[in-house]
Image (cartoon, rainbow, N blue to C red; front, side, top):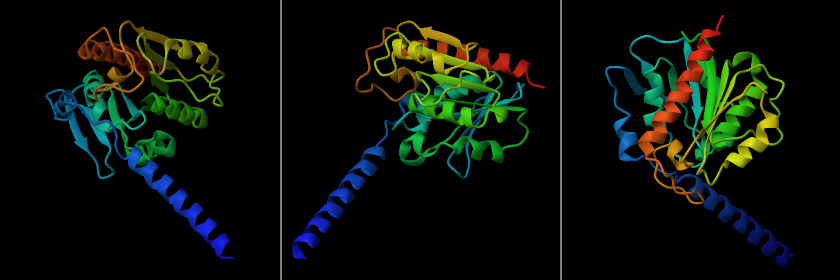
Length: 251
């Protein structure tokens, strides 16, 4: 009996240590750069704020296209790291909401977009998007709620292999980068069968995975051959153009 108790105690201790280690790992996300912190301040074109749930709001001050974009961060990436891209997209007319996720892993908060949609009024159509794991979760949310989503934006992301969106009529934008070492262009092309045939694909020549945000380098990634500011410009241009097209199709 004592041996059994020791084994049980050892197993429980091992599980506890693993769980604590995982929580500690997940709670140390890549932090925002100086450029990201600078983008968290309101400008003449965009009002930036944080709500009671910790969501980051980027609201156009001038003309709006009627769309909202709920954005899921990549795995273990501080949501603030996407501020430079969010403020750039908002400046072109779309309300952008970056939602925090449980333990910095979007897969643990798959329905977080619905919380945002239910919270905000005055949006004619909602789109969802995300970076890397966040994009996969955004794709899963779209698959589960196709009637309520006007568009899907994937940055360096593919749907989970079990999620087949190919028969949906939802417009999709997939942006990859030629130097991405984590979500390669080959992987994005392989996953084409999981997305609608009308999906728009953009490849940023010289870009990498980490420059889809502003949080520094990332293990396993390749070195970019273009500046972070240039990659951000290209991402904003492609995303804002796609969102404007989606907005024109709103009822």
